[in-house]
Image (tube, rainbow, N blue to C red):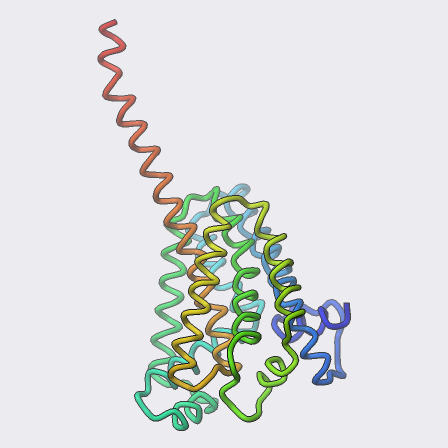
Length: 268
C-alpha cells in the first residue's frame, strides 16, 4: 500500500496520504503499481464523462474537459516529458546534445507544436466518438498508458548515467512487469473486444516508440516515460474512435437497407 501511495503521489496530484520521506527503494517498488494509479485516474475520467454525457448531454464540453483533465490531475507531468522528448529528438543533433536539450527546463518550438498537436488530435477523437464508447475509452486509457510506462521502464535501457528515471529502471524486474501485466489485463478484460484491441495497439505502439527512441538516444529517459504514456493514451482513443466510426457506418448501412426495402414491403 505504501508503494502504491508513493506512485499515486508522484504521478498525479491526488493526495490520499501525504508522503514526505521517499527512498530509492520506495520509488522502485511503486513502478509495479503504475497501472493501479491509472485505474484511479480512469475512475475520475469516467465519472466526469458519465455526468457530462448522460446527465447534462454536453458532448462537446465533455470532449474538451476530458482532454484537459489528464493535464490537471497529473500536473502536466507526462505532457512535459513529451515536450522535452520532442525538443531533443527532433533537434537533429548528436546523441549527447539531444540528451542535454531534453534536460533543459525550457521548452522549444518542437515541444510546443507536438503537445498542441496532440491535444487537437485527442479532442477530435473524443468529439467524433460515439458517446456510449467514451466512458469505457477514458476508463481504460490511463491504465494502458501507465502500463506502457512500465514497459518502457522494464524493457529498455536507461540512456543516462544518473537521473530520477534511472531509479525506476534499476529497480524494475520481472516481478514488476508481471504484476503490471496481470493488473492491466484484469482491468481491461471486462470491457470487451474494443478494449482488448486498444491494449494490443497500445503495447505495440509503446514498444515501437521506445525502440525508435533507443535508436536515437541509446536508451530511454524519464521524459520518454512520460511521452510514451501520453502517446499511448492517444492510440487508445484512436482505436475506440475507429471502432465508433465503423459501428456508425454499419448503423447507416442498415438504415439505408431498411429504407430501400420499405417500398417492397408496402407493395406486398
